[in-house]
Image (spheres, rainbow, N blue to C red):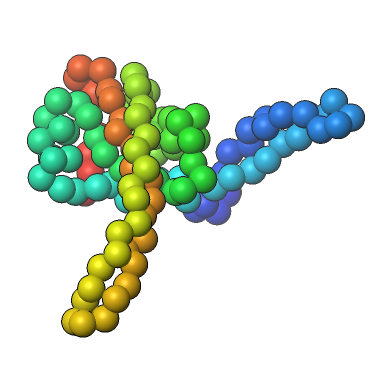
Length: 115
């Protein structure tokens, strides 16, 4: 059958010739990992789940990935950009990379099992 990496074809617009272009993106790459913090755990009790997502992802890609992997349909998705931060670790300066996180709202009764 197919390999473990499932991909999804999405129509992404038109070229100069008005031909529709298909782009393939990997749904596994959209959701980086679930964000497990105290705030995210409290929010999950109210059917809101928090995920770290790829920097180039948008609400449509995140919705497709949630539907594909967790078999639930989100009601609403909010995306927050996490800024990069300057840090000093053991006397050396560095930068903690930023990213994006997504708040996924589900209807009452739907659950996502994050293991």
